[in-house]
Length: 170
Image (cartoon, rainbow, N blue to C red):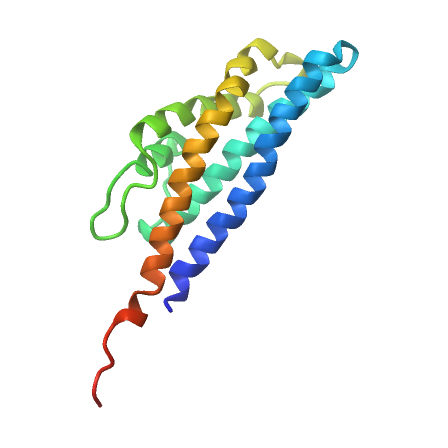
């Protein structure tokens, strides 16, 4: 067993489980905001924070992949956007693409929103800007989860590659 690849696959799956809970909370809190006008601000703030957390968690996975398989982390002013694009690249000597281009393009809206949330006060959050992200999330999350699960399966296959080698004679 090549533990490096198994460890990365496991770390991705642990993150995915956390992100699943976050994705569920986003939908639940959005619905609560629609039903409870008196407490809408609190629910909207929770949705914004959880959307932020969702993309941050995905980016944490992408950074792990970049560090472990792609030769290092990115730097510079636009590294967040570059990292997302990098996940669409098929690197023949290192790994297949992690995400389809369309999936990454759709995720870019969440990256941009996360950036806005980091740079404004909670009182400036505009629920109308979140609405489309919340409504699109179940479909996008399903795609992202499937693609990351497939990538984890690839890593587990590589982790077992040494078990498939014939025994060498001494």
